[in-house]
Image (tube, rainbow, N blue to C red; front, side):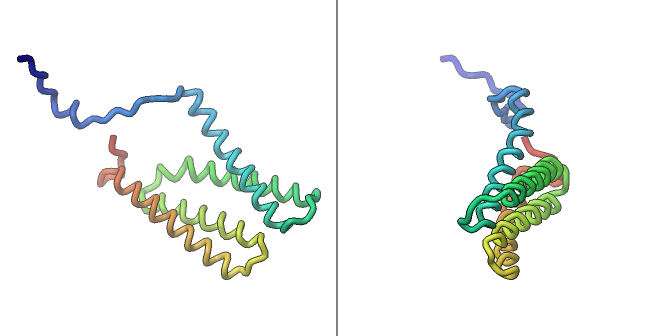
Length: 146
């Protein structure tokens, strides 16, 4: 009977992920994702601010400026955070997410305290998730596993 030859330990422990998309697709996604998320966030903030009223020029300007700021900050955090140690990585996503949600909720006319509380709560959840993922996908020196 034929048996499979034993593989070396290095081959067994290495997990290879298939490269589904081309390098061009990844390059486009690095630009498209912040732009699309920024436009969605800007539209959402403008809709919250006008509270069902008519769309005005100032409301459009507010939406586009909000979209631009969100897209730039998201791209910066998305690009720079993985280079940080896992604690600062989680802290950067905490600050970004907490501020984004708090600002969005504040546009509805809610108080600063409730906006800050919701931002802290959502930011803490994001921070816990990012820290857990970083902790389980890095070795003790902070290098990615796999």
